[in-house]
Length: 363
Ligand SMILES: *Cc1c(COP(=O)(O)O)cnc(C)c1O
Image 1 (spheres, rainbow, N blue to C red):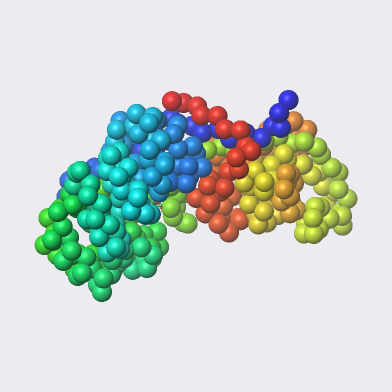
Image 2 (spheres, rainbow, N blue to C red):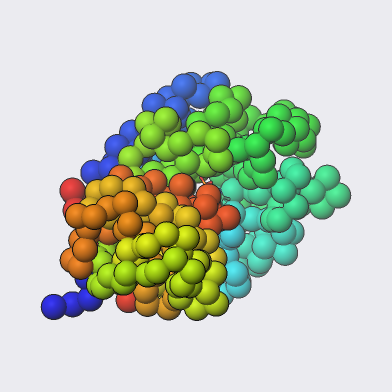
């Protein structure tokens, strides 16, 4: 028998979450917005190809990072527009970008110059990225005028979409301060725009226009610390499950696991779960992190090791060796586990280790 750990990816839930995104997109300020399903990082750990195939025909496009990933989508017969969120990385890639009909984001003048110099057989559509306050990628008030002048003269660049990315769409500061800068720089712009990530799509109507770029919401994670995925109408897509391998009766005063960071304060039954940080479970999840055993909530105990972790079965007398354990997913929100571990569900999903067998259901 294989080690009992496995991840299940529910493609039906994925499609449901896309439909939630669609409902919000349809309420855009200037009519329905379109959707780029963000499938970077192996679709946030959910498997790029199965996710793209499930969403093909339902989403308006896909957004990812690497040209080789885009090529795989084309090979698999995916026809939707594909956006390269970080643009192309070297001029040699441009021929393939044009041939595969892929749209690069452009965030530096040198990229425009490279497109002009490439002598491509077709005009290349681009997404021009503005840095409106995130200070990661994009043109600024200082660098934009030169790029704008270059664009006005360019004969190699096709349709242009203006794009920016929000830094605090999930927080108190919101998006208006960035939208104001975006509008000032793009004054008079008649073309398309691309603004909203998941948080903006769900919360900031004024940013829902052109092409939205939802990621985490598709995978059933909440972008908000204070609003659950369930409250947003989202369903979990990835469920990570394993089993209890062994049970230890631990006397009060005894400590459990490396570093002894958990000490029993009562006669305790400690379950050993076949899941550790080498499977993608966060090592920094402290004792007390929520976990589901036999369908019932309990908590972890002790430090997460490479291949195993501990949970407290003292109040679950029926649980024992072979009991099913849900680390996150159906019945145990990844957001709750992430919050206890001081991270976000994005990181849990992306960290799912290659050694964990994955099955895709519900397509
Ligand atoms: C990752 C990413 C997104 C998706 O963000 P979510 O918070 O997962 O919705 C959108 N736009 C850009 C530029 C990104 O890098």
